[in-house]
Length: 271
Length: 211
Image (cartoon, rainbow over all chains, first blue to last red; front, side):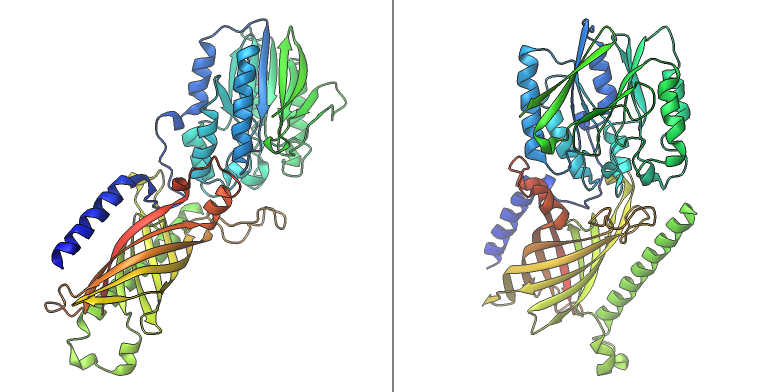
């Protein structure tokens, strides 16, 4: 009997050792390593290693929520397109983790890691639920960040005001203004965020300042956002600055924007 | 304000810990001490105390519980902790579990094998960010789930032994293991063949000391 028990113990010990990563301590454990850390900065470094051509091509997706199979198809489609017509990078416009769970962050990034080009993820409101704010910082880095590629400054900004109880600090308009202030390093800018300024989830007291910063220096080519899960190009304010609401992954379509000589063109692909 | 709330949470957790400690000490010695041998008092003592590793409810969880219907149903209460060395921010949580013990094999002397236990649990994580009812800054039904309280299910097995039964007031020690998942993981996996099953699994094992 004791021998049988010992054998059983031995078998179970080996069983448990072999499935070490299934010993879950909590669904809120944030313990990212390697490629799951500091993702945006790592991708900025790898993007800036190559020289931008005369045309910059960017594929957009977002609002992936729990649509992981569709997310996978998007990645495959972009990869095969990239083989024929080069794509400079991919932008995910937020809501990569539907419940803000660290495991959902890991799933989301596991698909993006299969891309054969650099990618960037902006913060969405769902990404902030629970301790999602911590998970985003650990995995992607700063909530507001920017880089310059081919004389164009790409500015990513957190506009999820509701998640911060409309505290008057989100979005950080001063930071945005400072980013867009003309310098010799860039000629034009593109601003990317999750929630558009006219939405009820955006701090209405900051809406006017937000857009006036975007319009102020006359250098913003267009802005891109998600959150609404459909696609439309529109000019919501009296000036001519275009807002591009890009397809969410659930539409099984994605938008590709090409920028040449300060002008942009938009195409839609199905997957 | 935030640090005050945190202190408040820590204090609650501390109280729970003290409660578990007191009850478990009481249950270990009450059998021998005849002076507290009133039946009414004994009725409220837990039937077992548990120490569990992982299983989604903490790095280590300590629990106590009662058994009903001739050891067929267990109701357990756990306090679980994940220290900072395993996550960016340490986690305190409590959970309530119902376990139905479907089969019992008593073929061997001093050993009882419970090969199939099925269970349901509800898990509550402490902290402002783990809200249970939608905070005031959201319109109604803005999010349909709550990060602070979620439920899950598990399957398990247990081996009850008479180890140390002669040397201590405990009637026996049991070893158990469980495999489970929670609703938020199941709904993430639903309709997604690209999500590996192993990612939604919560394994755990533990030891139970019976009164």
